[in-house]
Length: 229
Image 1: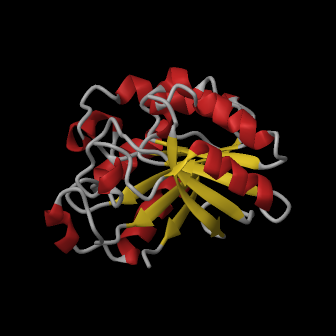
Image 2: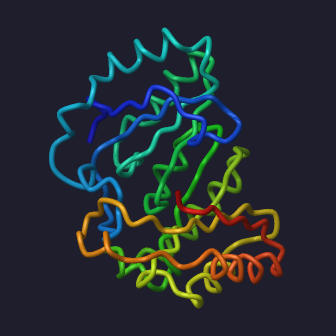
C-alpha cells in the first residue's frame, strides 16, 4: 500500500506531547478492534475528504514555521511501504514526527526514523483474538524492543475497554513492560465504533483505572491514567 491520500487535522495540542502539531491519518488496518473510533479507516478506499500527499505536504511546508511536529496515525500507518519516505520528507521541513502504531509489523517499525512512537497494546498479548489477530504476541514483543532501542521518545498505551481489557490483561501487559517505560491507561469513550454495539458500552470508572495504574507503578513502570472526555 502506498500513501497517495491522507487525512489532515491542521492543528492539535493533544496528539504530540509538548508540540503544536498537525495530524495525518492513513487508511487501512490489519486489526479489527470492535471499539475502533475510526471505522471508516479500517477497510475500503480512503475517505472522500482525504487530500493528496502533495496537498498535505504543501500545507506542512506553508505552516512549518508555526508547527513543531506531525503525528501520523491511522488506521495503521506501517501498512504503507512508503511511510519511511514520508517521515523523511517531513523531517526535511524541520518538523518532528510521531508515529502511532499497533506494533504488529515490527520489521516496518525498524525502518522508521521517527522522533516519537506511541504503541497501542490492545489487550494482553495472549488475547489478541479479541481484536482479530490471535498470533500477535511475538510481533508485539519484537516491536516493543525495537521502539526501546530506537533512541526515540516513546510510550505504550492501552484503551481500557470493558469486555476487551480486564484486570488480568493489564497485569499481564505490565509484565511485558520494563522499568523506565511510560505506559498510559486511557478510559474508553463510547463514540462511533466499528461494531455499533460498543457505542452503548459504558467505560470503567476512573477509580478502576487508578487501581490498575497503581499495580503497574509498583513494578517500576511510569504509569498514567487519561480520562475520557
